[in-house]
Image (tube, rainbow, N blue to C red; front, side, top):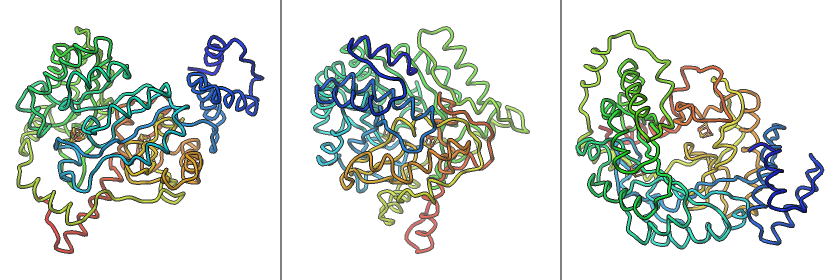
Length: 458
Ligand code: SF4
Ligand code: SF4
């Protein structure tokens, strides 16, 4: 919403609202008044005005707080999907969010419109999740999450009905064999029954299905649309796989089979045109890729490797990961690392970076859900959220975006490949764009482990 519309909405909600445009001090005072009166909706609207002003003026130090925040309530997952780090972490060193983190987070809840419960874990596994959802609701924050839909009952569905307007469910195939081959440990029938239960109890909830497009499911993608319709899903987003060197799954990325990918993605578009299910995202970049071989040759290449990794490979990866004792490689975000510009050009600022930071169960703040490596600060240790939010590292990244340089660590970001950013456009793509920094880091650690004779990656 633009500034004028926000002002209009504020006047509608509070007929005494008067503000001299651009007078930041005055606006801050008005917001503090709303805070004292616990008029959360108005606090949030003023926060949006600050957000729009700061972005318009390309400010490196900002006056707004993030309107959305991803809070990882648990990094445990009961699944081991073949494209996810849970495939090799085996929940090693994982746990639930600490109570201190929730209490520190409470300080910014008046400004926050939406709390997203997930990170790299299944949020509904948290035993106190319904209590926390109630806390966010008390501050007028809407709640949402991504879920694998393996945990659901009537009580949880009613809690969702009272706090959520939308939810994202993960599903990579309409066929049982492929679904369970990719989403290991999530039974296909249980998934379908849980989606039906959720739909029955929450008739107004917008259910979006996220699908990761990869070699394994590429030819089945058009069937996803009628399948989603049968389950009562409202929209489908086809996302791109970002391979991880450690897992050796580079050849699962559909960009290696561009003619085939284009053919099936067009079929998805055709299926969606005939359906009430809305197609909200496709890996658009594939439409700009090409190969020197025919579609038949591409498909022969796709079949060259086994479709699903075998249990031995998975066990080896899990053992290596445990030997590395590497719950997650973390680096303190600084002007030198996150502040480093990549070779891809851009215009604007990443929506996630500007609006949706990521909070780990231990209080570490990351700029987004994609970069799980650079810690901008720890909420438990910082005096305030603002100290991290306006710290040097945050300012350095804002500076790069505003200078038209995509930060290096953003390379291979699946949001960019999906062309899903309304505030950011890529103006030139360098080959380095396709290699993810996180993946490179994990790979180099695994190489070190090999040298130390600690493990063997299959
Ligand atoms: S359900 Fe989600 S978090 Fe869990 S293993 Fe699969 S992709 Fe990863
Ligand atoms: S472009 Fe991707 S990696 Fe970079 S800040 Fe945005 S979401 Fe994160």
